[in-house]
Length: 307
Image (cartoon, rainbow, N blue to C red; front, top):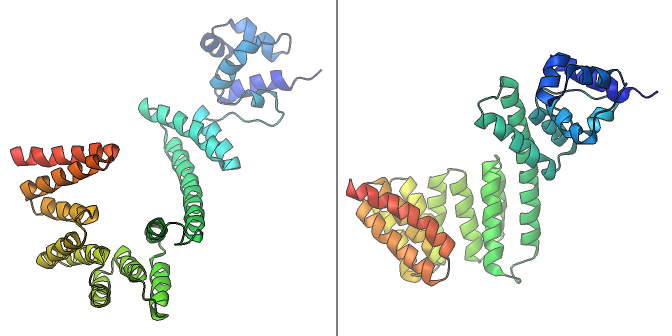
């Protein structure tokens, strides 16, 4: 006679430090019923299996396996599943279960550890996945959509800087320039690489070289202005951003940089005025979601004016 199921019921109950009476009360059955299940005299109704599995922090399948272990809680059980598969679809249910523990204030020290590991593994997956997708986008080439190509390249560079690969960004971008590139976007990539690495002086140095070659490239002045701001050259930063807008008045990045600067120095009226310009432009261009998000920032700025 196969007693795996009944043996597991007893083992899981004991691992959870529950008496038959306590398990019976939670499952809303009699202690006698629990005893009969564990002695393999009767089987629970199939509708009871999800409740039993949840009580013992296992899956229904675990109830029938010869080598199954009860976990401290169901969240840890799902975390173990994700740890074994590393599949994103297994991350989601585990994440939801841990969120329930957090919301109810029932997270143990081990839960925090396991929840951290869960996100650590997911972070690794997301990083590798993002790099792969960026590479595939870049591989499509400039001919397909030049603007998307450069935006994708910059996004990959930003990710590299966030995971400690800033020097790879710099080396790659510098190599292209040293090979004689006359594409201003390659020069922008080098400036961005230094900026992402926190090397503002080098970014500024290459910005000056770049505008001598490409004086009408608006994006250059954005990166140059941002570098100037970091270096405390505020008037020069404003001059750069204004130059970018002079070349291309619809360049939102320059406006966002100016907003950030004005808010940092406490000139909320100047910042709010630009917020309104940006929001109006976004709405006229049909970017209503982006406009709504910026409206929240603008309201926060307005509240500071009114104080």
